[in-house]
Length: 303
Image (cartoon, rainbow, N blue to C red; front, side):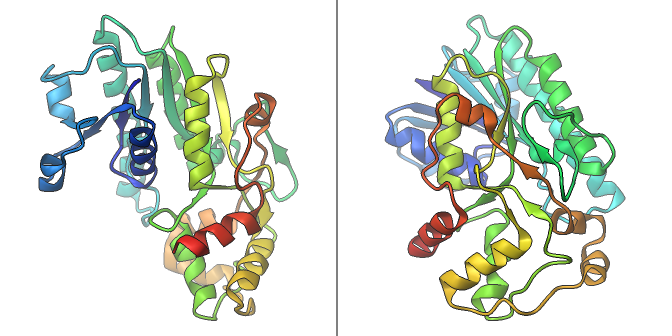
């Protein structure tokens, strides 16, 4: 199997690359520029292309089985007006570029795995969301994600499209978890804001397995919530990590402090949504780490 990953040098893309190389797949990473490390790698089943090479049809891959599009500027930055524009524009531009390349292929890939996020549902302390829930346009992240998915719907017509609505991905080498865990590890952890806001999370290994599952199961299409079947509140997250690291959960972080320090980005920590992976469960996907305790114990062992 030959798989092309756009955004493949990031936290999730790198994990996917390693997983598929171990399975014996051919993996092609499309990146903005190649580094010396990329040029020096000697894995025969792994290759790198720049966006310019792809757009100019230089060494463009053929007979591609699947495309994974994770490309876009990180949301883990202060949301200045210019950053907000770039976060949205980078996603739309990348998706449109991937769609143009796919349309140019004589033999189309069987499936497109399109990055998305559970932020598309908006936030709520009480409501539960699944793939059939209405999406929102009332806040910044919901609007960004909705436009991102619309670009994919428009660009990848007549190809099986999986819109992977990802929650908080837990891993040791990237994403939000290292920063979330740090206060607890040094003994100053505590709830954020009210502590009642939901955290829709997933272990990185389960996310990688779910993406592979969506590629191999040809009846899976449309939105797929990439989250654990057991979401937790911020309070529950704190209690779990405190018990695992034998540290106190005692020092609350006030909302006004986060809003002052992070601006609009504070909504990532102060607001949330209870999201369930009904599609994954309906098609028989089995989570290796269905509970937060199991996930965090594994991450501690591997750290």
